[in-house]
Image (tube, rainbow, N blue to C red; front, side, top):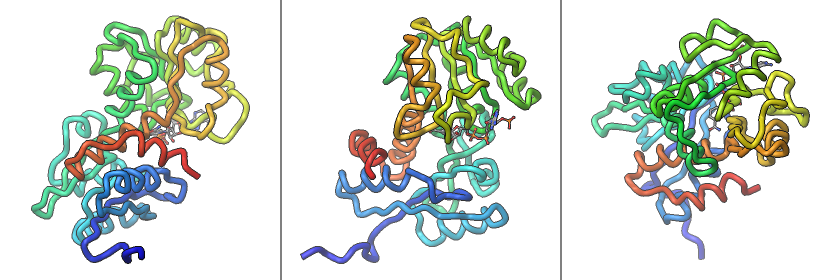
Length: 275
Ligand code: NAP
């Protein structure tokens, strides 16, 4: 007979966002807890932007053992933290909160680590001195820029709202020709916009003609099937990295800090793709 679950001893972690129902993190983390036999549960909490601080403090007061943070709260949660890591200071956003056992919490950003681990796993490349083009300059782009600069890459950035680029790298005008020219020189091209999320067409603002076997194309957008841009880049001979690897590895880095246990990557990967 199955034991009733959860019990009063079950620990819980979760993710906050607004909206949050699309999040794949519960599947990924609950698969990890099951694989390791940990009596933990991972939940998704829809928290509206007016109540972020109250909600975060309340969840930790109620015994929460760790939180992930997603759009639009990654910046707002910093004010709740009693300490933040150098990654949070540099990126200006936290995606992971770890209780310190003293009523406070440390803010970390594992997106940069997740980005690099997925790249190293799928398409290893020497970034030191390498030219990189990134399309997009939002929250995820800040983490990617931090990661790439840490490896010595020379970063060029194109974004619809051009004034956001300068803080991240050398500005590339947001025109088709300028983006294609920059991509032709780049060893790595990163899409950190949400373009390509809900379409089967290759977004016109992403470079394609200049991609080839000399390029690694990395799309942060996560879908169960390859994004149209990545599929088209692969057809031109480029090596590709999809958003699933970054999602997996940023989650694994958070899991490691909450539980003190090495994350079961295969179970987490399977959890992400389960229906
Ligand atoms: P964000 O802060 O809202 O930034 C959105 C970016 O997309 C901005 O650069 C924005 O340009 C651009 N954009 C949106 N619509 C556009 C359009 N129609 N034309 C041109 N540019 C457009 O979001 P974010 O947190 O950076 O996330 C960006 C993407 O990365 C999302 O798809 C997200 O799901 C994905 N992501 C994936 C992971 C992962 O683990 N795989 C982690 C984080 C994020 P403007 O500045 O001009 O508005």
